[in-house]
Image (cartoon, rainbow, N blue to C red; front, top):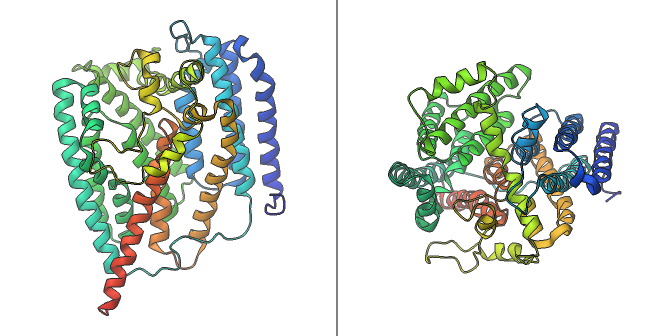
Length: 476
């Protein structure tokens, strides 16, 4: 490792900062049960500021890793951030077995995992030399790209709209929980093909980046899709698609300077408002004056405004991690890595049976009973999933996560420094964020399946169709 990584001065500074905050967290960890939650909020926030600063020392553009890191703060420490700002009611115990002290303990353990991931990301991001880019040596025919892009878009858009319309109807009739249960218990074919839609949007944007007219049509379809998606009561996947398109914009169009970052911040703030309104509608508590009331609550400084509600809702994820840590292995045995082994079997598409034989119960379904009696899902995370498999040894998996993020960064930088940018390489790399960001609050076991089906298969389809055109002597 030492021979393969040459660290420059900026990277050394980043590494020293990262090691210092890790040392601080290690010192705090044994006493975290007895430390006031407000101090934990300060420690966590300072640690994230330091991680952000250390990342900024080695990077000049928005990257997948920093978006992922921001998501971890929102979903694991959203409530601690509210505590940091002086809102005291959002950190509390849960029934008899998850006290505030235990939640603080889990928050510090989670922070340790993230800091270890960050250190290895810094180390391997500093590796010099160009990476070999997948699909770079394959030539693509323009006509083949057009056929695959529009074919994938039409099929996935049709099934996505079909599912969304059914979800909207069920949400209005029976409620969101029923619609969500129906979605995951059925619609096997529809779910399989609709998973390709985020990638289809990205491939079309790459294909027609110079054609403003078609780009407007693509974005019109995107707005329709996002509107229906929010109306169905769901939110997260739409937000992650928007984040992925931000990365596409960063690498394909214009770098986000300070002015564009300010505009992006305003857009994200508006999105936050939209998300909490979707939640209000979903839970059946909307009324004709809800929008004005939400705006007025922010103006008046009320504790329950749409921003605090969103952060509180996002930050509830720390409770699901706490339940996993509390119940493993005393009530639920460790899975000893079987989760990840079965992930290989999930490469078989779930089209021909009611349940893939390699599918297993998720963290969400296994532990929901202990958090809320099983009345609704609690989400998951890559950290909770790792703990369910390996207990405290899960922290040893974090170097691998940091390494993979660093390799992705190096692959993407090499791809965009290449004189001839192969559209397949660009698509393969830029489609990955559409599902990786989801692992902040979901199981990561499906990563291999996603990278093969949603990222690699469209590229393989382009190669096959290009070969057919080559046989017929078609050049474009």
